[in-house]
Amino acid sequence: MCRNIRTLFNFEPPATEDEIHASALQFVRKLSGFNKPSQANEAAFDRAVAEVSDAARKLLTSLNTHAPARDREVEAEKAKERSRLRFG
Image 1 (cartoon, helix red, strand yellow):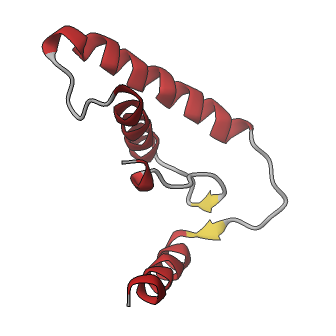
Image 2 (tube, one colour):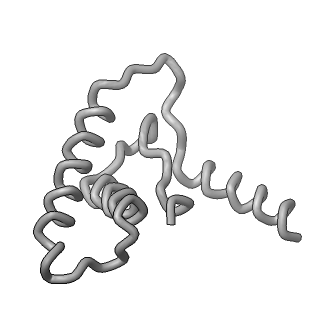
């Protein structure tokens, strides 16, 4: 599951709320072991996703770098090339 969590810092355009939420959801799924929680655990699960999203958003807005912002399309092409070399 965690392989789906992508780096969100230092991209142009910046990470969207949907991307931050998706990474938080994947993180909480990994920690809890639930892909979809039961009704009894749904409130706690949803609360955890919201709290992790808030923490991620705060982290992303507080980080600083002197490196130029990365381009999403270029990074995606690099990942495809690495995959091609690895898996053939």
